[in-house]
Image (tube, rainbow, N blue to C red; front, side, top):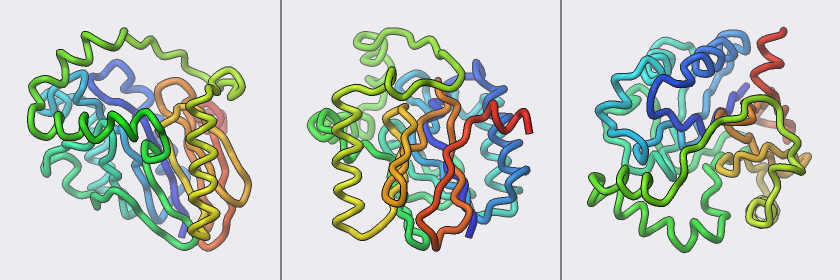
Length: 227
């Protein structure tokens, strides 16, 4: 089974619709058996679900899940936690997905700060979604994407290092190969764990040629565009 993994698109409007179109191009070029959307695909902390689903970006992804000849997995974790049932109805929705020797998680599970605040934020997003956008505006500055391949040494922080260390330990203990997103810091730990990065800044994604083998390739959208 060939698998494509995309994570952290954070779609709230059409400001990055060209990136979504490039993702679709990668899918049609690679002919995967499985597409894993690894969480934070949408961002209801920035726009209401009803508005998100009216965007061209959403429609492009929704159409892809309906018509592409591949099974689509939607890991609705973190920002996607309260996604209504009518969001990406053609995708299989789950919090964790296993295929062959690989396990796919969003990655928030390995972050100490999300371990503390995440459950409260998930509860809030489910019970009081009307507070999500005002709270995000109050506590988080506007993010200006810096597209292109990043030097992971520049993106690395102590928190990200902790996430990667805990994720690798989790993979070792469970005897699996682990694929995550969440950190926005693409990284490869051969034969054990891979962090697919994000579609906000790094424009990175993962190709797993055969899910029976512990081999994964970290690629960039710009690379795919040149090929």
